[in-house]
Image (cartoon, rainbow, N blue to C red; front, side, top):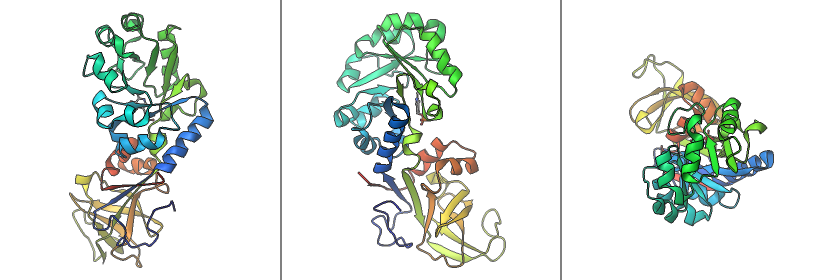
Length: 324
Ligand SMILES: *Cc1c(COP(=O)(O)O)cnc(C)c1O
């Protein structure tokens, strides 16, 4: 068990006792994930901390990563400004989303380079050293391959990227820029296993965070099941109640209780019923996400992506950082 976790099964005594859930983020694991990616790829790492680092807290995550990555990616200038990313980390920052401001000085002031996809954006933001976003299939805020040459020229652009899920898209990027830029990048978590996708830098988000978050909720009641129960009429031997519901992003799916894999049987607005064993008591933890129950497994049960699972569950309670 990582440092800083309460070792007893019971929740009281933990700093977050009384909260409906505890979100523990292991910054050491995030750092070592970055080091592992660096060792595997030998490329620059641009850590993606958009959407408040998928709910983990962009400021704390970026501070922990500053020494081991080359730069940071956010979605918008506003996100970078809010987390004071460039000042805090002394690393360059790239805003991946469509530019909401066309004032280059606003980007420069916050140490952010904008991604651009049209000639007018490129021209307006030329002094902010824009990066070209090339559309290789995502079909949103990116430049169609046939317009790449004109947009590069309009912004005096020397760097281009694409949001790619497959190697064929990486090849499309390379063909579209046709040797006209100094730097290219494409690989998010999906393509980290593909050396041909690494180009000049990799841009992982999920791969940095997936093993670093533990979300747990204390059982407030444990009961023997007396036949059909709850909204859905579930049946089991024993169940317990946690005070997280779909209002907090929870859905039915897997969980762990007292070290065993269990199921969240039913989710209400602000509470959920969880299958437990006969020795489980009120106060024991229900683990909703952890290195032993990674976002991919929860996502499969939810019919969602691991990104969505992280973004929901990491926001379900007060955050506590360990390994910083
Ligand atoms: C979100 C995002 C990433 C990171 O994706 P992960 O799957 O979390 O690694 C990389 N590049 C772009 C353009 C993105 O929008």
